[in-house]
Amino acid sequence: MYRQLDPQRIIATAEQLCARVDERFPGSSLSKLCRELVEVSRQTRERALEISRPHWPLRLGVGAFVLAMLGALAVLLRDLRLEWRLHDVASLVQFIEAGTNELVLIGAAAFFLMSTERRLKRARALKALHELRSLAHIVDMHQLTKDPDRIARQGADTASSPKRALSPFELSRYLDYCSETLAVIGKVAAVYAQTFDDEAALAAVDEIEDLTTGLSRKIWQKLMVLDAAPPR
Image (cartoon, rainbow, N blue to C red; front, side, top):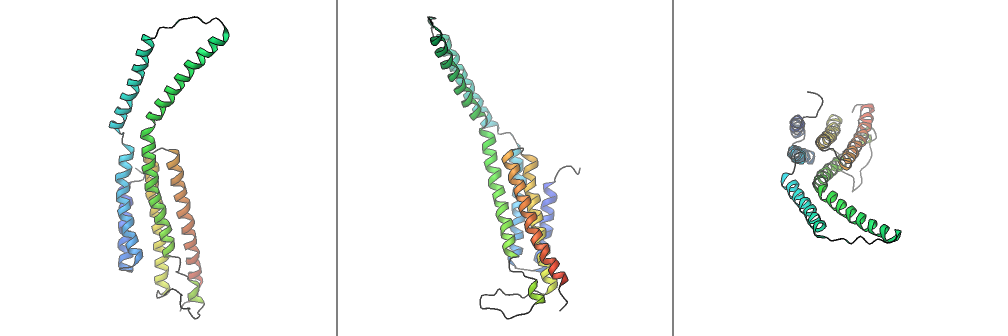
């Protein structure tokens, strides 16, 4: 029961997080981002199921092509009349080398065709994981200007200074929501890892997990600074 991630539970968590953000910061850009994360979570469930299923039309087409290629080779060998006049070792080596090259080319072509399905699935998974990576960077952009140090150190703003209208409590909730959003992004990415056992996809999932963990660590450093700031 607890040995696999349940995509439906992840969707429910994302929906609850979206509701909390929308109730606390209605109409904010972070709320819109959480809605996008909910939609991506739902798409991930469908995409992961599609990637895990066998692509039977492609498999049948590749199998038919390989069988046709082997059949053509068998007919060619049957109708080929060889004259065994190999008078020296050089002719024998040349004959063996030519036959080996043909077999290697046929084997390479068959392997390329049979790996087509995995390569197509890998491309779909990496494209979906790239979306999650972009979402993580967008979350980081949202918390970029949320500086808790400004609460403890008052000073004049410049013309280009961002607006800071959040109270210390609201700022702590905003940063905490950003951290939770990053955690959900990492779990959504992990859904692809448990349904598609591909080295490139697994590496991309690990990179996203490292990215979200690193970004969340920066947020928690801000929360520590905010917690240490004197009350206003």
